[in-house]
Image (cartoon, rainbow, N blue to C red):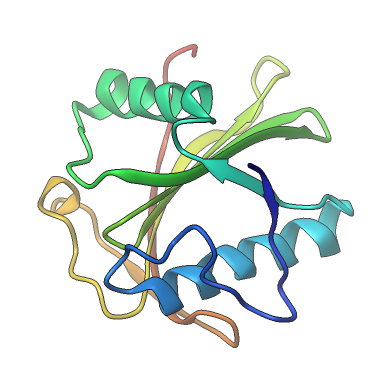
Length: 153
């Protein structure tokens, strides 16, 4: 069942099994606010098993580009297109959020972004990345990093 993320009343719906559910819900709400404000897009997520194509696409890119396999189970995911950009988000039980921004036009920006919820440790599989900090009213302190996608996916 899909869930339109509310960024005014942050809810842990679908994320309850995460040890940092409140912070992960804030991170998810932060993304929902961004897409509503920038693109007037309602950020809607589904349980990971119902959004398998999004989870598989993100996993394929991580494996092909950097030999990364995320150990934590995926809880929720979403996949959509805005302004010629294919977007995918996966939210993991550990508190990790991974997004893929993939411009469909040749030569456009293509990247994978990682965001760590407040209170979680850096996962071992992402230890090689440096994380910058940013403050969010919805999510507290977010630590983020990214890499540029080189291949075609």
